[in-house]
Amino acid sequence: MGRIGNAWRIGQASWAVLAKDRELAVVPVVAGIGALLAFAAVAGPGYLLLGGSDAVETSNVALWLVVALATVAATWVSAIGQAAVVAGAGQRMEGGDPTLTTAYATARARTGRLLGWAVMATVVSMVLDQIEQRLGMLGRAVSWIGGLAFAVMSFLALPIIVFEDVGAVEAFKRSSRLLKGTWGEQVTFSFGLGLLGLLAVLPAIAVGGGLAATGILPLVVLGVAAAFVWVMLVVAVTSALSAVFKTALYRWAKGLPVDPAFDAAELSGAFRPR
Image (cartoon, rainbow, N blue to C red; front, side):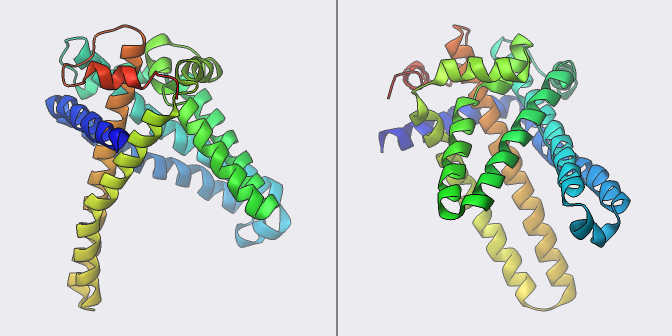
C-alpha cells in the first residue's frame, strides 16, 4: 500500500508540473495520430507492393519486414513526441517557460538518436512476440517477463537521450545502471497510472456504449466519437504525466533540481535496492 500511495503522490506531483504547461499534454495526441499515419504510410504501400492479400501466402518474410519497418516508423514518431514532453518538463524544472516550439526543437535535435531507439524497441518487441508465438504458455511467460524487464530497465532511456545526446544502446545501459534492482517504484507508478487511466475512460466507454446501443445512427456516431475523443485525451494526459515523472527521476538521479511538487524522499526511494 505504501508504494501505491507513493505512486498516487508522484502522479499528483507530475500533474502539478504539467498544469504549468498544459499545452504539453497535446503532444502525445499529435504524436499518437502521427504514429498511426506513419505506420499506415509504410505498411499500406508495402502491403500493396507485395501483392495485397496474396502477400500472406507468397512472402511471409517480406511481409514481416514491412510490418517491422512500419512499426519502427510509428515508434519513432511516438518517441519524438515523448521526447518533446521530456524536454519541456526539463526546461520547466530548470526555471524556464517551455513552449511547444522549444520542446519540439530539442526533440528534433535528437531525431537520429530517437530513430535508433525506435529500432531497438521494435526489435525487442518483435523478438519477444516470436518467443510468445513459438513456445506457447512458456513463451507467454518469457515474453511478459522480458517485456517488463525491458520497460523497467529502459525507464530513463528517453531523458538520457534527450539530455545527454547518446545513442539508444548507451542510453539503455545508463538507464539500467541507474535503475538496476529498483523495480518497485517504476512498476508501481506505471501500474497506478494505468489504473487511473482505465478508471478515467470507463465513463466515456459507458456513455458511448449506451448511445451506440440505441441503434439510432446520429447517436451511435456521437457516442463513438465522444468516447474516442475522451480516450485519446486520457491517453495523452497519462502519457505526458509519465514523461514528466521520468524527467524528474532522471534529474534527481543526476543531482539536478526538480520541481518542488516532488517529494525528495519519494524520488530517492526509487533508487533504494529492493
